[in-house]
Amino acid sequence: MKKEALLLSKVLVYTHKDADKNYDKHYSHLQIRIMALAFVIRKLDQTGKLPDNTLNASINARKYPALEDCGTRWLVDIDKEYNLNAKGQVVEIQLWDICNQIIHSHILESAGSQKRAFKYLFFVSDKKKLAGINRILITDFLKLARKVANSQVTKMRTEYDEEKMKWIITRN
Image (cartoon, rainbow, N blue to C red; front, side, top):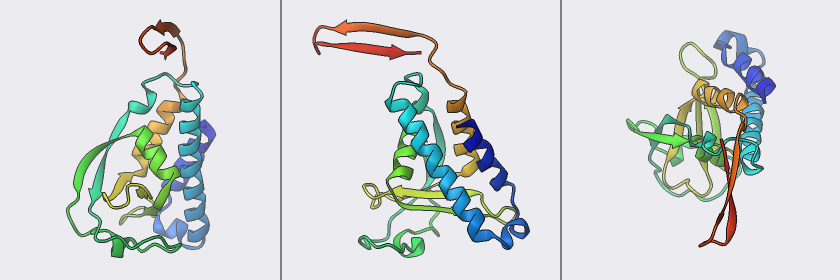
């Protein structure tokens, strides 16, 4: 996972001039790395390889409202589905939700700024597409991914819950 984060960070420093000749290649490379990181992070959590609170870490996102339900189609036009001209609402989004929405994405698009070819990540899952699309800084996602890569379970505790009649495992 550290390797994926490192490869992703290399793509983020590209300016428009750097990425111009092979933009599609770099764009695809970026999308694949983001998807791989999201899947690995979620899988590590589901299999108990991370401390329990790791995916509770959150970052600020900007949520843009949906314009209308355009149904399901293979080619998505963000401008027709979401009001990106609106100021957008600042929301806090947990890493677990980010990973789930990326994995089950209706839209997963990266966009640049004046200086960088790739700066922002727009994403929303099929399930949440009518609630609005999220925009985060790719560097913020990368920071969370690095935090996960450096996490490890150092202590486990088990106890039996009489009411639920099952063992509860806590990982720190």
